[in-house]
Length: 200
Image (cartoon, rainbow, N blue to C red; front, side):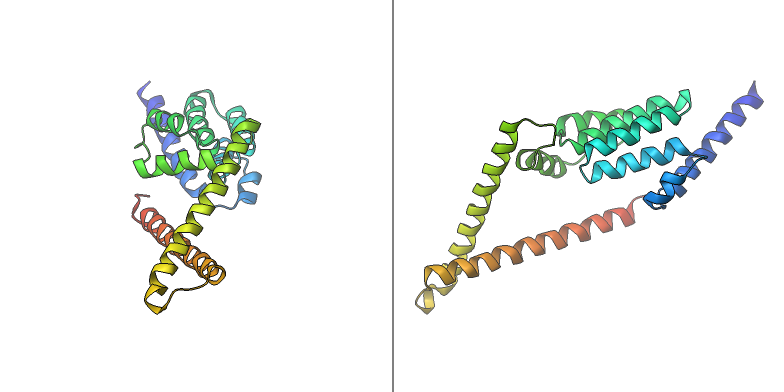
């Protein structure tokens, strides 16, 4: 019995090492994987959820569960729950699903960003009203950003005698684009630093 338990532990350790190696592979290589097919499909499902493609993520996890051994299926189902909650922008479900996986829940900032995305760009499964609300919110947000940009330009140009409405709106648009580009660059840098500092 003890020998069998040691063999199971060795197999699990080998499986974990294989999964870490699989994470470095391309999507095409994962599709062609046969030895660790369940792990490969689960990784593809997680990648699809990061692209917010819930339909593809669900299909990959169904294939992962079908290829998994009985003792692996519960963990893959939990991974699927977390990934699908992310893909469908369900912040509350994502937090509980991640906690069931035994991982640290997303930060408050990440939860806020996911909720905002769920409002602005609802999942494909959302109803027509949710999509119409998202379009309306995007229009309002763009108008608000343009108003802020216009206000900044007018404030800066006030000592120089002000600026006409059309050029001020155009400059305000450039200010907003520059600000969004800076925020996006900072976000990418922080995400890269977090990935680099994360334990392998």
